[in-house]
Amino acid sequence: MRRRNPEPAEATARNYAGAVYGSLLAASVIATAGTLGSFPRLQLVVMLLTTGLVFWITHVYARLVGDRLVGDRLAHQAWSWETIRHMARAEWPIAQAALLPAAAVAVSPSLGLGPGDTAWLALGVALAEQVAWATTAVVKAGASRRLVAVTGAINVLLGLVLVAAKAVVQH
Image (cartoon, rainbow, N blue to C red):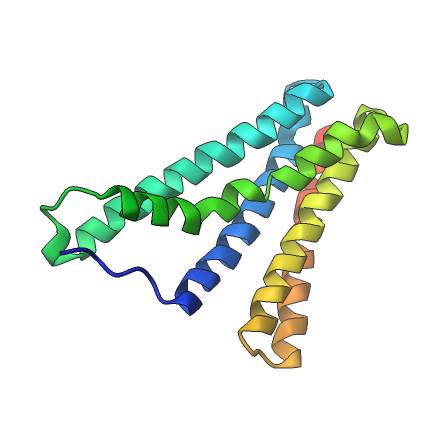
């Protein structure tokens, strides 16, 4: 007996949660990358993409294991490729959120940016993604304007914490 896939609303909510999480993860990588010295652009791109992929795989595995633990009837069944693919698709926004910041790093030379400015650009892109995903999620959920504003403000605050961390790491 196969487990049914999540309802579209549940899957959509998880996609937004993964995108917000992935954006914060990318911003954290960028904000703290300077603690070990200066990174060339290619290394920062690889760090972003690798971190996104590792966390994506980890979340897929954690969901598979977690679902197995709470699904009494499924506890002794093997995972099907369909279930694994479904979980991988559902968690993909975690990895996907690293793509735009990595692209910002990759194109920064064509914008005439040095390494320090490149990191700030990538951080700005990651944080803009985070705020956009979180705000879009609550708007699509039918939240009130007040809740949309609160969500945006909370995500801007989280972003400012990462900006402060980046500024402290640089000095």
